[in-house]
Image (cartoon, rainbow, N blue to C red; front, top):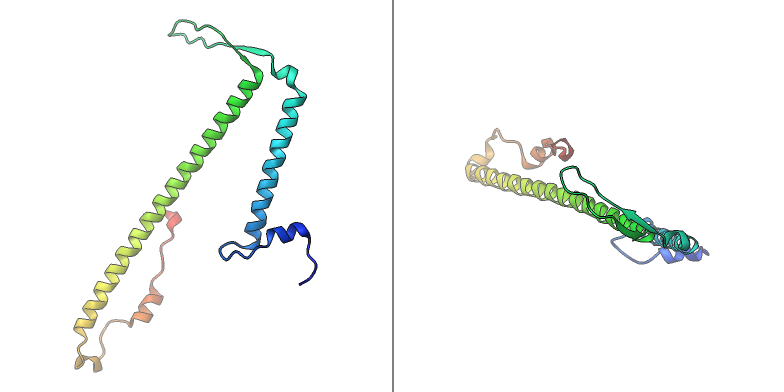
Length: 158
């Protein structure tokens, strides 16, 4: 085996279900997450005196009595905004995953029903074609030719 880069060798593992590109992508994702964490910690430590200052937040709705201002440190507001954004992104990704799994289950249900229908028609044609009639030509196509004529519907056109 030729001499490979040590980082590339970390990416290459004997995993049957993942390709080399998928394995390398995992390491790249982890490296980017570590880099983002490092830069954010650097930002927090270099701007400590600014981030520790209190910020007064108030909410005045016209149909409710005015609320008292809340004094919170700036870093808390930044972290709370980050946390809310992360939760919102996770909720959107979860919603997308649920929608895709529902489409998959619907498609699998359709496939099962169509397979049952094909089995029912094959059983009917087998009952009709007795050995005496097997020599005569039936108007049905052979199963191999019939399968070639069927095209699968596009699931993205729903």
